[in-house]
Image 1 (cartoon, helix red, strand yellow):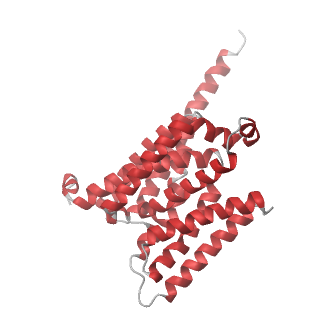
Image 2 (tube, rainbow, N blue to C red):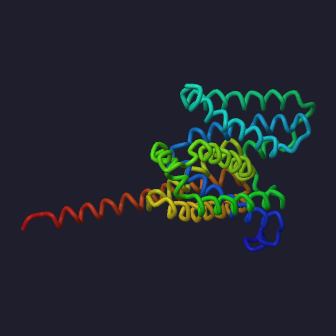
Image 3 (tube, one colour):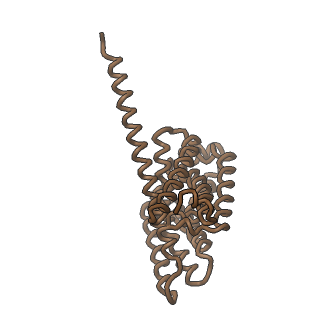
Length: 283
């Protein structure tokens, strides 16, 4: 297949649009996840979504919408158990993580015949993304941009110092639950990109890479969106050329970008250290 020929296919055009809007949504939410150290929570919500997918397949519902409802309830459950019921956060995450996967596997096995497109949900296949999936991701991206543009300071106050946020009369609990809901929605709408198994990576790797170059939250979001989109497109092209699964290669590309960036930053730090040491040597 010719390189430029790929652009003539509708499914590839849809995949590029999916990469763009998923990178925007994941760049915004992923930056929040990384700075608040909620990576384990996002992993729990991601794997718990299998429960909704299994129920959707069994009852004939839309698996994405079923997974979204299940993920939002799981996110609220983690927040409720850890903040109101005295359950350790890691225990709450592990319990709902396992519960969601167990429910999903039970319903998938109860479904007569072979579960259709199950591998796409587990490992991702962005080449199967539909026009409606792109619209949902685009709407989510616009909403997230608007929310963080209007309420970014309140969200950060609540994330880093909830006690201070309460003194400013901020609805801390409402903000926390709203952010958990956005994390769950972003996760589910991005499942087609890399699948349940690898989804946690696109919420963390581009953000970790961006964090190597800046600690400013806004700059981190912008840079992680650029890095995420570049990695997705590169992985998409290479997967098409090499005929390997797109989701797996997107994550592989993201990790390679992170390692290269890490090497560049380390070398720059060593060079700056040597220069500063040389300048501090007394004559």
